[in-house]
Length: 351
Image (cartoon, helix red, strand yellow):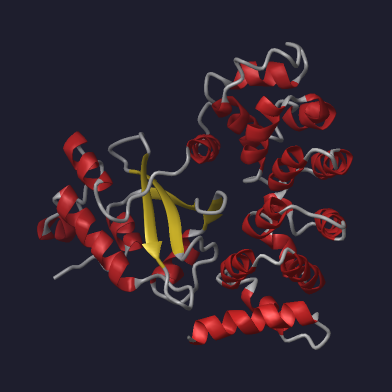
């Protein structure tokens, strides 16, 4: 008897084309080969968020050019591996909701294109989640680029606005979908050039959602430097700084961004929101041990034990950060405050 053991099996046996994205922290593509290893518990989930894997599955079959989306939230174990029981339960729900029979498996005629009723059943399962609207808009733009489809109807107007043609005060008709289209098409149509030149003029109503879109993309060095420069210039405007820092998330491993974050962390005062943005969005910068150590010491100085615990637990769940974090907490030159915070945290775990 043929069986479906994994989500990958189901997609492959249905002869579907598919793409996979993490959509928990930011939107990051997951290769099919990595996802197969994740499902087989050979690889920890790379981007955990609050103990779960938040996965967007985009697929389409030969019988339909219309791509479909599944949003799946699956729990992770203490090692960061996918919970196999939850994954198997989700597959069972899919098979039942779609009415897949053994003969479909034998004849390789699995149809994943849901009817309206089946689509409703698929949404009413314990593993379904609905991403924030700004993430849905970004994902839509990314998918359109990957599938070589046209941008939304808002793209052209958004480009005209960002070029400066329409006047910076006329932002009311600039749609978030247009901004995410721009972010997904940075190398095209002079989009990066417009942003490098005009980013400093954008009002809050445009800049903030634009930064949320940019966080999912690699940026050219000119745009990256322009953002870093504005962050330094807006030292008195915390909201602008926080969102601009988010815009650098995918590029946080770059030396220029690490230098900027170091400068922010060496300031006398830094708001808790900044620390949360650094750990939650710009964790790639914290793969540098020296910077991670500086970051931990700064979190301890807030004297907010709850914040330290939350950030520590968040970072230790990220596979690329975990070994560096363990090295940092064993450093003999760590401050007394950091040593005490770590001791208290581990005592709580033991209890």
